Length: 186
View 1: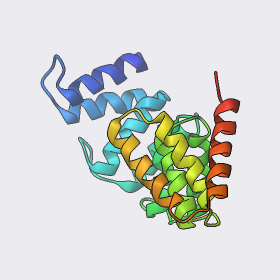
View 2: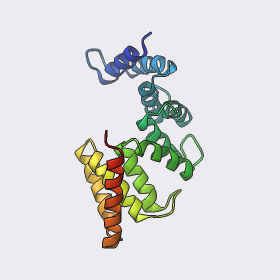
View 3: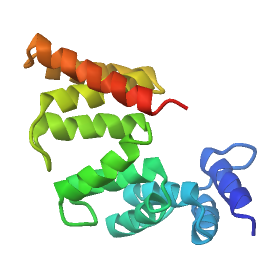
View 4: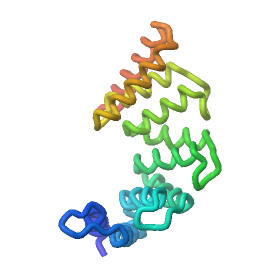
């Protein structure tokens, strides 16, 4: 009944590592861990409900599990919950609520949320359209990205935002990104 063990074993079944791949068994183990408050399991279960992996596809259940993990401070779940609000999946579409959850995750240095928050600013969704803020968040996402594909996407969006900015605005955005990084150093 140890939540960490249930989570790890569930992920082993999901990936077929050392055991036959079995999404139903994996989902059952994740659910046991999630019911005990394991934030990683809750976020994973949210993704599984969103996609229908090993469980019946349900956006409402996905939002429920994302919210449980998000309220514990889990950045990935906060980003996922924000995306559900953007898309209106399992909840009414609400860009303001999306912005709150994306910002919460972005402020933790979570690269995907920084990118997603940049998209809100670039498109004026739930926030005033602001290319300086968009550039700042994209730039932070470039620096924090864990994969080359994420880094390339954030770079492309940052450069696209810059195409409509003056040199002074770009300098301001870079300064804001550096200021944010200085405040969030370990």
